[in-house]
Image (tube, rainbow, N blue to C red; front, top):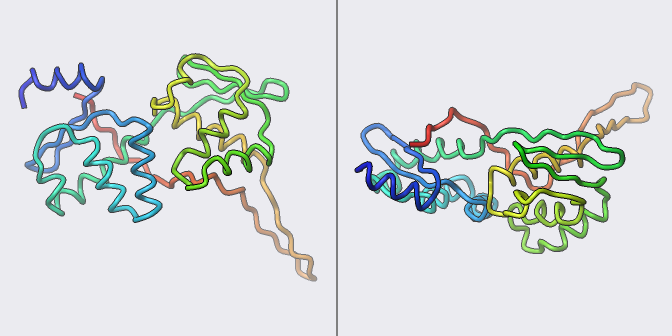
Length: 207
């Protein structure tokens, strides 16, 4: 691949990633939230293989097609795609009955989340599409926000934002106790709103 072509991709997509798999190489663009939504919907409906197929096919902009079509290359490549889920954590600061969420230089203020907020957000996502409930919930609870939060496609903002909102939902730890002669308890935390369980891998370096 020529440097001219890579530079053209950078101008078009903003960031370009190199994904080498042994003797093959793929070039990927930076994913947007719409890409993640499609991929996680595929994960929910059809499993991890479908997730990898959607992500790889969507982000692939050049390189060896074998990485998409030949199983031994595809299986290795799809694991590395999880690198795209590594984002800096948001900082959460209490502010009276609200919280300030800071992501990089961007800040927003959200109020306390109530059960009705969650119910309404879920109703606005009848198809249970990935990330839509979190998106609708943020729209309800946001009091103030910088312009960066207006871009719903910016995964570098949206991923940490949704994780921060989850943490605010699940601050309390619940203890279930069985009332019997011998007391026992189970500690459990509330379940998140359809947040995928994705492990992290080493970073791929943008070209």
